Length: 348
Image (cartoon, rainbow, N blue to C red; front, side, top):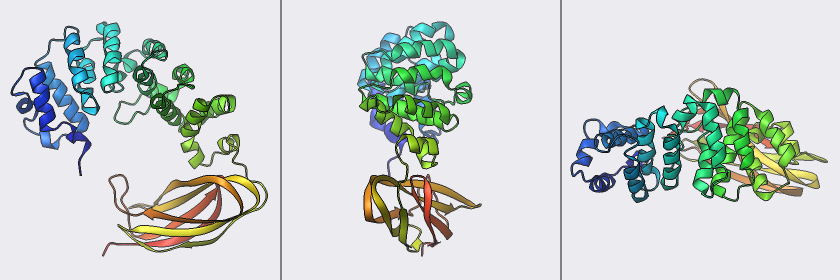
């Protein structure tokens, strides 16, 4: 299985060596513990090697702008990394302008965080200006670079504690025509909702139904609160149960680690209505249990709806399974309607 860190392949490193006219570039990069380095560590190693070749910032800007279009995609973040590592805060204006120029070829979302942490107010002023850019990559940078909990990126403690300073940036992008930008805004709002749900709930109440692009953002941003069964969000999205609703005939079979869990049930609704159907599994862990909620579907239901589902119990890097008695819960509009236990057995 290919790993993310393998984007820095021997051929990619050789090609970069040719571009900077250093024949032994790959040898310099791959010295010592290269095979053991994780993705971000490899990014740092390549950038450090470039530091021994390119001129110091800002003299290196023309060379960075020449190289970046030749090395697009994820591995191209070595060039924003170079700016992050070599630019001083005295180079503030040029450094951020350079990162904005580089981001369309890869992404500068990680590199800008050094400047955000150094001077939040000044950085947010610049990020707000990026929201009006004609380039969707730059508009996305305005949102993604300020996410308080960006995966692989430095956390922003001040914005985790108080996200309000970044909200004008997100509000400016709520109707963005680019799906690339909308995904970032939704992920940013979802980050905020984990500790400050009131700011997302306020925006749903104020903006839902005003624009299709905004509706997409708000719904995608609400996934954590919907899974948590937040009553305010469920009501704002119209997930209010009407009439008589029941779950019957819940059947769940034992499963062996590495195989698929199978279960089925029926939903009975006395009136036609749109229902949000989910299931939760309380996984046995080394210590205690951990609940994970999965969405089944949202659909119109009247009368009887038969539901069948499979759930993988293969071990993954993000989830390791343990034998024992697990619990399956059926949720409708965030409320518990049926529960059953099932056994998970060791692989033979």
